[in-house]
Image (tube, rainbow, N blue to C red):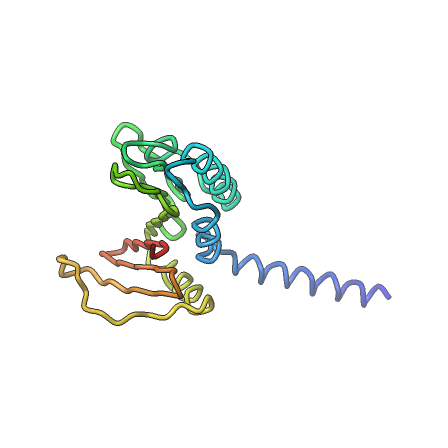
Length: 192
């Protein structure tokens, strides 16, 4: 019995180590789209809609170890929401920049819902991730593949010759990935 119990403990410890090695350093793409579609922000109910959306995404990003201290406090300009989070680095408040201290796992998140000062609804939030290493790109591409996203083949519209852009879609969900040097910019949004 002791031998079986010892083997069971070793097996569980091994499974725990394997699971720990597969930990995701960035919030999963499917969860980002859950946050995006959580609530549509209307002009008529802007304050209540924005408050509910902010509470929801703050809870989720904090659960993944992100710190809420970039680009504002939830509101600004023609935007009902403009907010930011980071992990794997520090926010240099004097120079208004994020400095990665763990480039392999560092990422920032900017969330916005804007209507450009028009009298239309704000719609769903838009989420933009910046990954500071191509290491996380493979994980994001795997997530898109497993999530049923299809890559759209189009000419790279970027003016930067060293930039590479990929567009993925699944129904009305869109993800644009732009790679410049070692920075990966992942824009997630809903076609409206």
